Length: 186
Image (cartoon, rainbow, N blue to C red):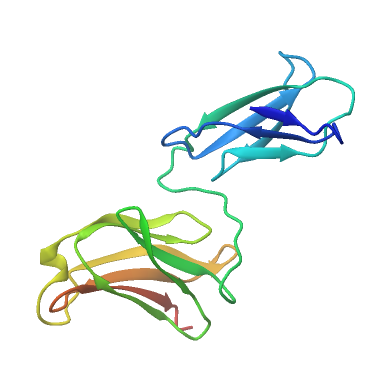
């Protein structure tokens, strides 16, 4: 559905039905049906208001859904909870916890981890790890890691200064997902 503002025809609001599994939408528009040379990319919503149309001509619009082909890419603009990067752990598609990374702190713990499908990611970046954590990996005695992995290189520009690692530590009733920032000691 397209509604042009009768008070100011330079504005138009489009609304469309969401497409299941779509990561986003490309909204193309122009003044001829086969010349839709202007476009917007839209994530996480099903509406767009355009404030840059010319008053007189009629416009044609087309909305196309797309799948980015990655596990979890979404352009997101959000206010962060502090300085630096944020990391987050999701279980079965739902956010469990988001943690702000701070200088001088190199270990972050997500506790009360129960069996299920998990995704660990940088808030504004790609998936760093995903997989299923089982009861055998999460419930038990001792403090020996049952799952370990190197998640990402750390650094400034192209200079690598360390790596981000993860481990899963079992517990009596639930486990811990631990993220370690391991910097080179040079």
